[in-house]
Length: 271
Image (cartoon, rainbow, N blue to C red; front, side, top):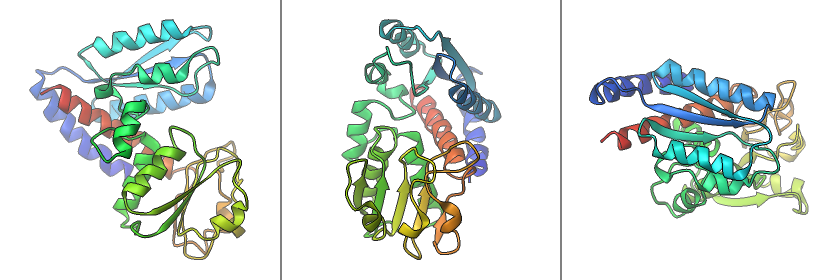
């Protein structure tokens, strides 16, 4: 599906560039510090941009960068007319106020759906770019015609860029949603009631296969060394109705959705 999306986006970018007299829209990615996993993610996103004709711009800042310095870099990108999307790679070093920096991104360029205002609009069903991973999950469910309306979805994890937004998106799609977290009691019993299980807890194979009922839809948004996710997938493949593999499931859709939202932003800003 991610390859199909890229083919469609490449055609849209060609049309867009003709309308902009050949100017190439830019997705700017800010990387603070030297975290190797973050660097890998940034490189993958850059390659995806190149495949469809966007220009990736990598802004690298040192580990000791302050909040004020990062805000200044974001301001420059907000004001640059060639930049159509801004991505601040998570996580940033601990001395930085990450939320303040996320919220400083121009809403029209918030293609990763990280601002408080964007989240609020999305939650209320108004136009906004959704967080890329949750929006990618919803694209998968829609593409494969997985029934969501009236189903019980259990989301394990409540992070502001994954658990909370995917819960709101499922709610907007008329699912009945339960959000579980570190303080939830009787977690296995709750998961056993789920028609749709979303693993977004960030702990390898924390969600056990025996917790998941037969016929459930299993969405694993985690990735850990060794190619495993947040869910014990090997124990559910034979009994679930659908599942996302790790790797190769949610990850490619996250990047495809980020790029799709960048193209949409470029089209709007280029008018």
